[in-house]
Amino acid sequence: MMRLLTKNVSANSRAGRQTGGGRRAARDAPASELFATEYAWGHPPEDPRVLEQPVDAVIVSDCVYHEDVAPLLVTSLVDVCRSRDDGVPVVALVGQELRSDLVHHVFVELLLRSFEVYRVPVHPSVDGCYALYAMWLREPGTGA
Image 1 (cartoon, one colour):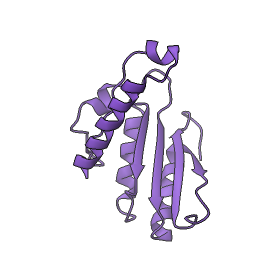
Image 2: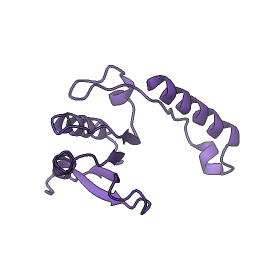
Image 3: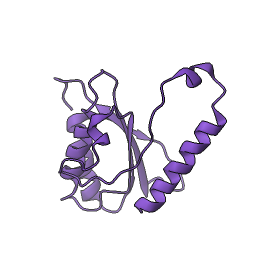
C-alpha cells in the first residue's frame, strides 16, 4: 500500500510543479512538501516530518474497521492537527466504508469530542455505504 501511495504522491507532486498553476501567488509561495508516511496510531510518529513541519491536511481512507481502533486513530488525528502553532487549522478528510453501525457510531462520537465535523455529501449510489467527513479541531473551551 505505501509503495503505491508514495508513487501517487510523487507523480502528483511532479505534475503540480510542471503545470505551475499559472497564478502569480502560487509561483511566489514558498515551496511545500507533499508526503505520505506510515503512522502507527497511538504512538509517536516515526517520521519526524509529521510533527516538525506545519501540516496542512491529513487524509484518512477506510481505516476504522473495529471500534477498538477508533480511539487510537482519533488520538493520533488530534496530535497531528495540534502540531501547528501558527493558528492555521489543519483539515482532516476521512473517507470511510460503513461496515458496522457500532463502529461508525463510536468513531463519530469520538471525533465530535475534539473536532468540528461535517459530513460531505457523496453520490446517491454510494450514500449509506460510504461516508466522507471534513473536520478541524474545535476551539479550546468549546464542547460537542
